[in-house]
Image (cartoon, rainbow, N blue to C red; front, side):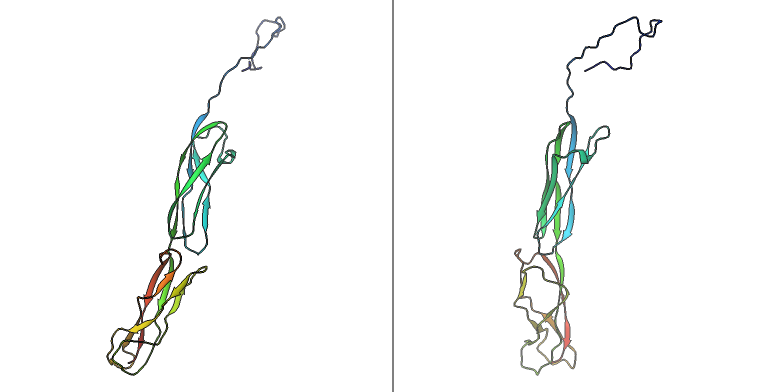
Length: 193
């Protein structure tokens, strides 16, 4: 600590009547408290590892900003649908930091499967030789759709274009997450037995 040079001596001689010497003293500035909160966010599954970074801070003093906290970082990542924590870590010279985690959520990618029209002669079954198609959305990365097939909802002759075809529920999605990375919707088609 040192004496501020802004003092003045009123001695009728502009302070010249004194030979002033300055002595310093020791002291302590303690760290102020600040709270770091890791950013949160949401994104849609895309087959790749996705991440979020950054943080917000409260408790900074003077002209200090988050950019001054060069020793602090925060983030999180994930590939599959679900929610993971985002974590902040680090230290700062002038602040005693406390940390609040955030969250990073990956939501399912929409995927529509549509039966295709089919016509055949009555054979007593609901079988269809048609193969459903992906009509909206897409598969990402190395994800695959297996055992995709379709059936008539009725085995009976109902008239031209009056039969309904739907996607068989026996398909499977291989996405490394039990199929949970996709929100699948099913569309029917008309056909004829």
